[in-house]
Image (tube, rainbow, N blue to C red):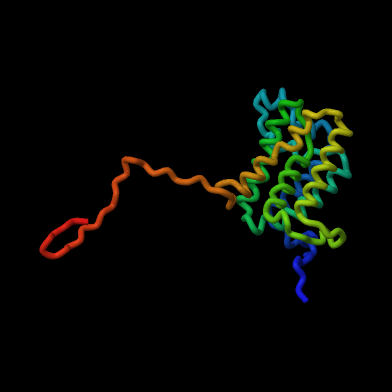
Amino acid sequence: MSSRYSLQFGGPPSWRRIPPITRAVLVLVAAGYLLSLAAPGAAFWLVLAPGAVLAGQAWRLLTYAVVNVSIGAVLVDLLLLWQMGGELEPRWGSRRFGAFLAAATVLAGALGLLVGGGAGLSPTVLALIFAWMLEGPSQRLLFFGVFPMTRLGFAALAFVLVVFSELEATRSLPRLLFVLGGLPVAWLFVRGPRGGGPRFPRLRSPFRRRRFTVVDAGRDFRVH
């Protein structure tokens, strides 16, 4: 008797098997959390501050992601990054996966400048969840060996929890622009022209020379 769907264990890989980009981000986020506890003044140079970015401190568009003062948020973000990064990076390749994380972080940071800045890995992790979901929305699995669900169901649950927790913490709808800012990058990398999604047709130039073949037709000497 064959089952229509196969449940797969979705646990994260062991530390030695974690791909290099995912491992590096895990270490940086953990180090950023420890820095925010031990030296808050030094961590201030990493957070997303609109005035500082406009003054030329462009590195903040990336480094804000490693600064977080909430141990709960850090643990959840690290766990999701460990799980999904360990799955997507081997499939995409480290170069493409690193470009995806950087682009999602920078775009969310740029949008965060419009709402007063911010910090934390949540925008990047949400973009990662969205990309992971788009790779197989209907795929069923046992997430961490406990809850059977589809990737689409898990992504919807994650978005609801993040949105309500953000609204509860900030009471600001515009802040969602920052938290959800990396989602267009996820769509582009998975469904866009470079991600295996719909590709744009190549336009033919009216001035392009057409190829022709000369065929010897015997006595008629006709050219085709």
